[in-house]
Length: 83
Image 1: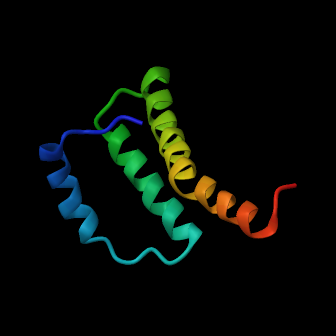
Image 2: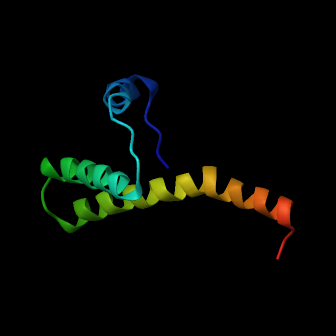
């Protein structure tokens, strides 16, 4: 997953810190979708751009899985034994 330099993160951190609490999957999906639409609002409606948008979300999902879900699965294996 690409990481942006610290200086560029500041403008996003300020906005993200102001977001209200996201309480359910539907709210999370709504916010993600609106961010995707914001990204597309200043770009041409071309396959490559749409593909970039979709795969950015997919790569974020992969990174989230790697950092959180996989670790949770490791704990479950330790707790309950492997299959």
